[in-house]
Length: 412
Image (cartoon, rainbow, N blue to C red; front, side):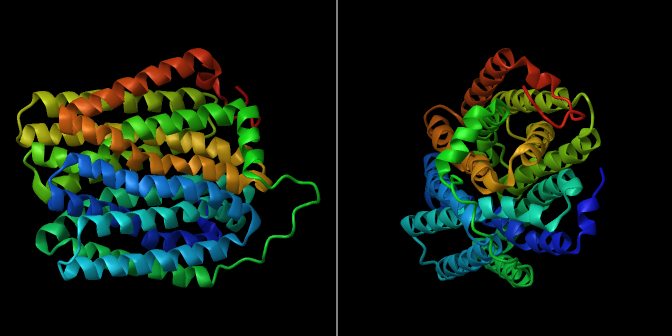
């Protein structure tokens, strides 16, 4: 896979700076999940944590998409980095002094979700201004490597730090990460956006109309949402699986890291086929592999007794799921970034970025199922639902499997 977007000095600085903020996002997710589970011992509360983060993020994402198309995207990112750093600093103090209560943690999680909702659309709409159009596929893949790479490494480190020190150290490191990103963004500010042409619709409705009219956007965003809400959301209840498998804090970090390992591998694999006439098959095949890996994960954790064999098998399933999910996500997101008009980029890709909030929101469904029945049953439910949705979309839009990267129109 070519990494030619890194030849752009401004994108290169942005990408390396994003290691701080993206890594912080991975670490505070691990820290918040373990802190809530440690305080309550409840899978349902993990679902409530996901709800507390996801709903503000989704609402703010819609508004953030509007703002990203109207305001200076660089300044939005600078402000969100500062606010996230301050929020995590406050959480560090509460946790370090052992004065944190569950309602405070949930409120702070909601604030972080709100900040993330404004950050994501601006971030997705900002980086194309730092590269040449020919570097778009490379930049999307690099963004995924950054996200998935930190998810591969940092959760394992986070689990180890929790075991050696406590969750407060994770929140402290996160505040530093956002501070570094803010410092770099100061030197990457761009001129204010020019006023849009008279009569151009700047509303959220224009983006929704565009997505409804362009079936490719409607279908790919719908599949992505489904895969995150019913599939990837199993990471929200991963502490339950760590306890079920007798793996503890370190095992929890390794399980999350296994999904990141698979995602990085999937990104590297699919990067070789971005210009292939068989892109559609690779993309949809990745979605199918992801759904099947969830079935295997549920079977392994539900049928095998706790122990090294069950734990390693679960990690293997998580890696396979990461490979499949990443192959679909990278391919579909690249197609959408190329096809979306720049005037609508913030709003349309903001709607797409709700994707990442649905991971946490899906925990609100899987958490209660895990509490009432079992965690493997919750994952099985999500996997079956995802498989049904893939069958329906494939039957309704068979051309998804025949998308051709050599045809820049990307019609279905």
